[in-house]
Amino acid sequence: MTGVLIRRAAPEDLGAVLGLVREFYLVDGHDYDHDALVRALGPLLGGDEHGGVWLFDTGYAVLTWGYSLESGGRDALLDEFYVRDRGRGTGSAVLAELADVARAAGASRVFLETERPNHAARRFYRRSGFTEEDSTWLSLAL
Image (cartoon, rainbow, N blue to C red; front, side, top):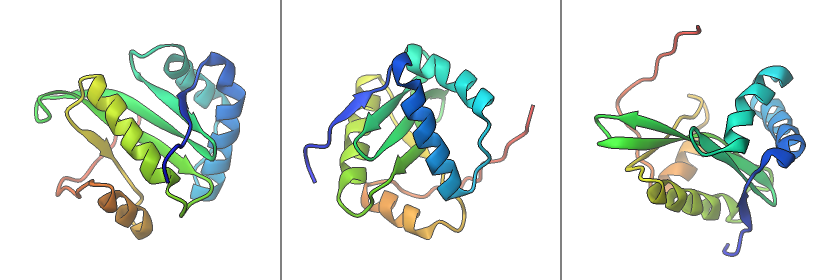
């Protein structure tokens, strides 16, 4: 599919973004914390320092900036990616556009994570050029 209309979300899109996030979290089994999401989305909708949110006709994506010596500097994290109407090429078109956005912002790599049992998502990402790495992410809640 070509011709997917994707645009950078702005502060006035907060309500629409929250609606999509709520839908995604329900589908994917994540806890939805409205206040925490509003705080986290503010800088992403209001500027480019940390990354941004992109909207398209059937979903949204969050791309954030990181920095890594292994990546040679700036890299990007596809933090969230939700496509409501799958199997029509929208996801592939959006991923290609976001790769261009990351490249233009000086990122040398785009990272993402999937839940361990989500084999379908990993197949999709591999078809889009992503490769699995041997490293394992760990986290510490602060």
